[in-house]
Length: 400
View (tube, rainbow, N blue to C red):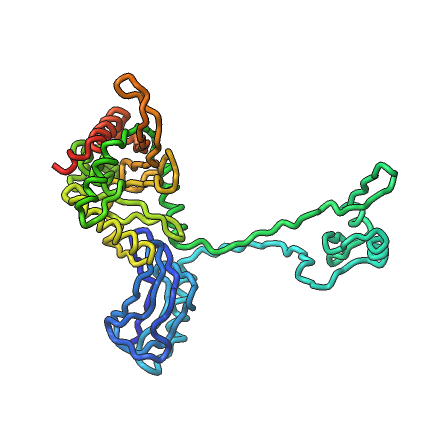
């Protein structure tokens, strides 16, 4: 008996997928476990596996086309089965469950579809005498024909100092743009962050951190470490240690209940071509700096190559977004659902500071904590930042 293959829901946020490429063609024998196609989801390109044996009788979606979750994309069955009846039955089911909406759009007369220039003889004569380019003028006559009135309304006469009249077209440029389909990733980012921004009452607190000791400490660590440690790695570790001391910052608002997470899974925002992915460093408080560094590099490469799997991005309890490497001094970030906070990290800036009553050169970094006011108040958010500041300014504490 023929089996209908539908677009599966490959992540918790996926609403539709794009068939990147079919690895089987109609008529091929398929065994359970064979990969039928590669599917681009909102977060990664994943493999579509067959759970049935048989012949691939039908492919309903071309390469590059998007398909809503649960829509029919293929049929597997025995050779000779009547797939037309199956598809017809499926269409009938869809029609019974879908509301019919008829939208009538009046047809707009677009003369650009007709490559021939339409103009009245008088309009052509005036244009020739005055040196007017008719291709820049939109006609209001029958079928988009340009008439005398159109020339008068679409040109202006400029008088020069010697009383010579010059006719110039009113339009000296042409509006143009490019449009490309919005990627699945960008759609999901837009939806999830819009929901977060409007459903979570955000407030923001910013603190300056003196990075002098951190810079020196990182330099010493990298003199002996086999793995190069970045400032971001130190921030992740320090954040994890601070979260252990401030559990409310590591919590989630779940409609009818408040969840305080005992584990610490830190999402690290990674910029990719189509938007932003947030792979997770799980149990970050229990990992060494070198472990965190290697894991961040590995996840970042997987994100950029679209090789992340659901286990790489699901389950965050806190998120860090660092734009310091892009020269950004300070910014605010939108909370990543279902976190209660997100930390926005700016760049390290060489700045004059007062030390022991004297003005000396220093290195400051600004961090901004975006908080969900349903869970976190100003006092608890500030206490967390104060702990984070102490840890980063004296990084030996995060190694204990």
